[in-house]
Structures are given as structure tokens and as C-alpha cells.
Image (tube, rainbow, N blue to C red):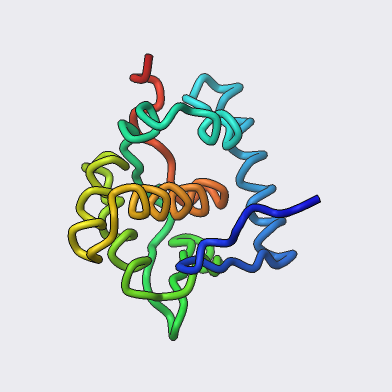
Length: 150
């Protein structure tokens, strides 16, 4: 079975620690949904048509602080101090992280990244989309407006 081509701008290694933290976060998410809090699945996000995905407004969850540590972008739990290794601290990843600010849509972040990096809009949107899914997969970032999509 062939694998999809790798994006040269992103590389991610999932450690057991990261996996189990994400699993715990998903269990908390499920418990929240039982209490009536909005819930989404990563597969549902990945299945969204491009126009709906472009309208999502990602926001970093309040329990996490994102920053550069050495040559990596990391998320640090504000209460626990737990560190999640997210991505290489490349120019495009740092810019993308800053563009996913809780106010911009994925579409506007992609257009801005294209201008800043001199990329095509398609390439920039693919990068923003993949970066968002990395953040959403660790539950560090969620779409603020998931319920507003039709």
C-alpha cells in the first residue's frame, strides 16, 4: 500500500507520551460532551469540504501555551507543565501558528501565508490545513465555530 506524499514543510513524530496525553484529552472531551459541551471528532473535521474547512476559526485552548523551544514548536500545559512536541520551528510553521489566532479563518490564514512565503494559495492552504490538524489532533486547538457550519 502506498503512502501519501509527505509535506516537506512538516515532520511529526508521535511518542507514546504524546499519544497517551492525546488519548486522555479525548477522554476528557468525551466526558465534556456528556455534560453538553460542544464536541467534534477529528475525522469529521478531516471530512469537511474545503469551503467549510476554510471557514473554521481555530483557537488554542486556554490550558495550553504555545512557543518555540530550541528548534521545535511545543505546547506546554499551563496547569500541568506537560510538554507536547508539535512541529519543527520553521519560518512557515511559526507564521502559521501565529495566524491561527482565534480570530482568523483557516482560509484567511492560508491566503496570508501564501503572501508571506511567496507560495501558491493551494500550497499555503494545504500547509495551514495540515498544521491545524496536528494541533487539533493533540486537542491543543479546536475550531471555535464548528457549530456554525451548514
